[in-house]
Length: 525
Image 1 (tube, rainbow, N blue to C red):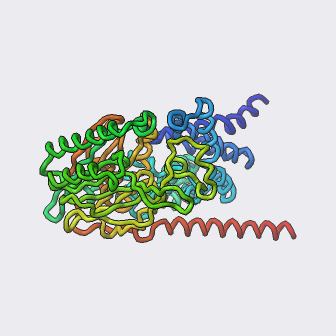
Image 2 (cartoon, helix red, strand yellow):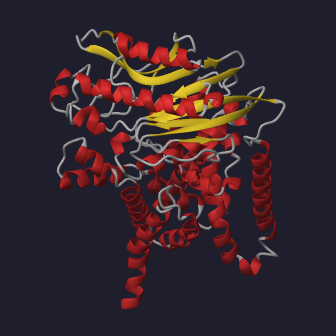
Image 3 (spheres, rainbow, N blue to C red):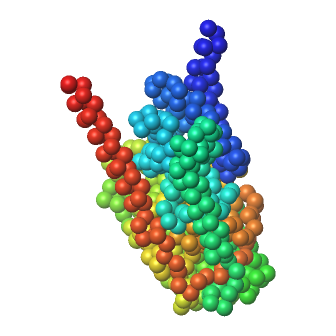
């Protein structure tokens, strides 16, 4: 009797915990991706449970995954939100309870379609639930494939959701083969051959893409030299110490000197200088001395400079001042030739929800919480006559589909400026990179990522890191040369976006509705 009782407890408690550990240990910081091969074993144990217990098991799995993967939220809440230690961990738990509720829907739909379905059905169900799930930090299961880039390349066909489908299908294939080992060459021969063909296609496509989208120089390519400057302006300097004007000026001079040093070491391979988000502590347009320093830097070296700064706007009808989180672009003549105002703002980090409706909310929250106004335009900037790039600020690089609003047919590469100083010396910066990497492959455009406190890097159009990666919380710079095709590639994903996933969602919904009414009809009979 004790043995029979221990099995449900094992399935209902231990397996969900181990499954959640398998998932978060595949995150960039830990990178124990092979552990995902154990995930189907633990899932299969939970699939034997009654539906209610299975739903709770999948929920527990998601809680463990989020607690392990997003534990750094406690540090942010403690150091920058002013919460006590217990309250900060309570916030992590609250976040974990609700961040991946799609796991419960996944459990239900598995029972609906049958737990012993093929790996493709299981993967399709998971992708549907993953796509419709609202997330503060949009994480996709497929990002774990970035440690095996040959499996990563189909992102240019169906985006990061396609990678999630591939990852979930591939880890279930060995388990499916083991389950059907006795009938593999008889009853299940065709199903096995389909899976084998799928694997061959993914690997073959990946090998071809890795060869086609390298960063090697060639006579038919155009080249651009880029210098990334990591200023290491910590959030303590922004808010904690409340720097005086003189101290802020000194911080600004530090990044100017670091940039001068970087250009002097790479004078022939610097066409564009990239400063991080929020690297300038003064509103550039309102401080002539600051603007002149940047303009003189551009003129002195004959380079383009792009930098992040606060932009002061007019007055809101409510009476408050309007601010934008803006990326400015200066040409080699020292003129501002473009600016991009960040569109996707992070709640409670960059804006206070419902503040315009309830102005008193500003009195309840820490002073460190900003309230920016969203931008509306998605520009593409020119670098000379034949090179163009599109800007993304911070969080925008992890949102699948956001880039489709830019003229991606014209842009040759992506520039992402970021301030991950909010997350301190935690796993967040590495997780951010893992979430951002699919954009380079989805659109086949190299991505230049300059972070205030690190880690900065350059990623090529196949998802490979082709520069050094800077350490966290150090001043540093990177110089890299991008070798770009004469005409920017336009991928299938860039054309159709996430429509295949939306169609899949509609199909699953229709099948569910059909089954529901059939059950009602049979019940009436």
